[in-house]
Image 1: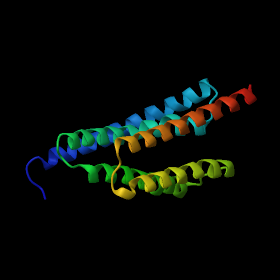
Image 2 (image 1 turned 135 degrees about the horizontal axis):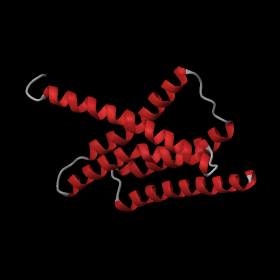
Image 3 (image 1 turned 180 degrees about the horizontal axis):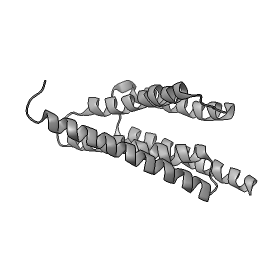
Image 4 (image 1 turned 120 degrees about the vertical axis):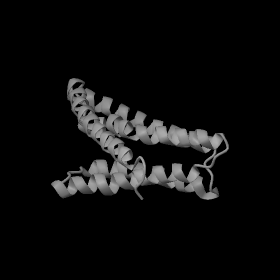
Length: 165
């Protein structure tokens, strides 16, 4: 399994992981400052900014793979695996590790409201994927649905901001 370049690969992997740790700290610290400055809830910053920010690598990987599809390759399984692996990682690793290190408080209203949206999004993907394809129109539906959810969060945050003022 070794061979030429394997130490280089390991060095770049460790360098990349170190950069991720540093960038995560930078992003989190500044997200908290932004939330405090604009008097936004931590939940909104988490869903609206941090979640999108942490999804950017998956988005870039998927765009790159989709461009390879357009060039005649077939990277569909890579794209699907990337998306599903990220989702399972978020639930299993992120929530699990945070729970193991202490406890997480999840207000029932968040669990109900956002849990329903999460289940609806999963159901939408399940229905769209029944034919084994995600067409451009179906991709647009998924992106617009996400955009509407973010708009809903933004509107809700604005309403909460007015009641706090």
